[in-house]
Image: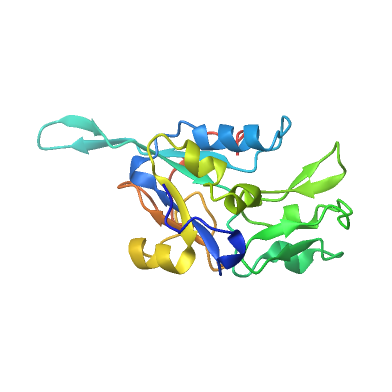
Amino acid sequence: MTDVTKANPTKYKQLGFYLDQTGCTGCKACQIACKDKNDLPVGINWRRVAEYSGGGWSQDESEGTFKPNIFTYYTSVACNHCQDPICIRVCPTQAMHKGDDGIVSVDASVCIGCRYCEWACPYGAPQFSAEKGVMTKCNFCQDFLAEGRDPACVAACPSRVLHFGEIDDLRKKHGDTADIEPLPDPKITKPNLVITPHKDAQKSGHGHGVLANPNEV
C-alpha cells in the first residue's frame, strides 16, 4: 500500500518513508526484500531493522513483590533522503547528489570510494562495496517507481506498517516524529522520515535501553 499516486517518480517533490512502529514485529521482510531486489552481497544492507530493548524489575513494597517492566521495539530504517544530507556536503567528487524527486543517489562513475559519506551519515546509509570500489545506497527503488510499483521494502511488509509518499502528505497524516531511539537527533540532517512511536519508544538521546542487535545494523 502506498500514500502516493502511482506514476513516474519525477513528479514527486520530496519522497519519504513512514513507519508505524506500533505494528512492526521485527520480521526483517523489508530488509530481505531490499537485499534480494538489489542483489546485495554479505555485509551490505541498505535497509536494516534495529531492535531496541531495555527495562528491568520494579518493587511493589506494599505487596512485597517485584514486577517486570521490560520492553522491546523495532525500527526499520534505510536512507532517509534527508533535507540536509550530510553525505552530499562531504563528498569531494559530487558523486552524492539529490534529484528533483528528493531522492539522494550516488553516481558510481565519479565516486572514488573514499567513504567520507559513510563516516558522516548518522544513519549509516551509504555503504562501501569492496567488489565495485564505490559507495552504494538505497535509491528508493527508482526503477520500481517508474513502473508504478512500490519500493521493494514497502511491498514486502506483511504487517503493512511501512509506507512511502510525499513527505508533506505523510506528516499531515501521521505527524512529524522522527526522534526515536536508537536513531540520531533528526536536527542533524532533517530526515524525510515519519514514525508513529511504539508505546515504549524513547526519544533520541534520552533512552535507557540498548541496541540488542548491533552486529546487524
